[in-house]
Length: 388
Image 1: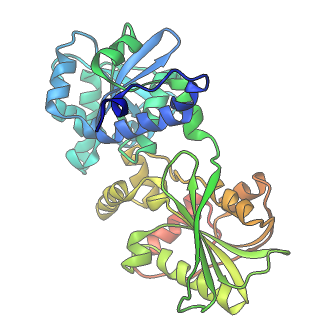
Image 2: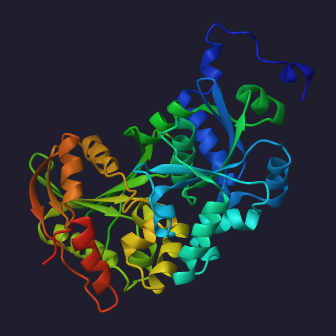
């Protein structure tokens, strides 16, 4: 390699084009959070160092404890309420100011129910820990909300250790950390995404020799979603459509704990029998909480919780999926009207709000087993699914 090839880039009038955009900066921070790397969030004159509790290692925790600054543990209301803490304010995100003697193991036990007893003693244990940590009400600070949003987006437990900073940008520069504005992070993580076509190919399948797979990548660089044509659907009128969220355990392993696998196969067969349709395979495993957290939820269900209670115990909402992805893929395909194969009215609501006319809801009641009877009942009673 000659010296010329090592020369710095010349100053260019359009040099700003080489700098990361706001979206790219936020996604860079999200990647760091998932790795367990500290990041800096700012909001006006306030700033904080943030680390996901799940990924916090002893060396970094020790460094934070020695800083002399108060450590804040940021959790969701769902997590604290399901842990037995009473009289919580009606806000999604709260924080506890930790005393100096609270250990890393105790912090992790507050974030991860697998590290605390799953019996009646659990409530008393965590209530006592919260009391020792001096609970304080969080009234909507963007730093806390952005930190939890980043954890959820990274499919980690929604729990953060946060250290207030006097000068966020300087701290980030000194330690080589990513730095982003909290409001910008929330905006990017909650905005409906554009989806760019990546590739398309024909795919003969057992259910139909005429098949075609379209791969789309969200413009934030996150995981791809797939639009699968089965048969020869007519896009000039209402198209038979299924929004199917990925379920590795049901779709691949044939799990009896859910009805996902039977729904997937029944939807494909229905489309093939009716001449054609479009299956939107959305990579939103475990109602959007990811495979790792889904298995955590399954372990809680083994202890007697239903699917909604388990999600809440982990700190998540009932359902963290974003069905706007489905609307975006339909628009990419040029589909304006859909006959939707679903039992979930939330999907109809989102598609309609995004400009897709749903002309008919086609029920998809299949796959009931003795093992998933409670799961299906919970979907009907707590999530509003239309099941007979």
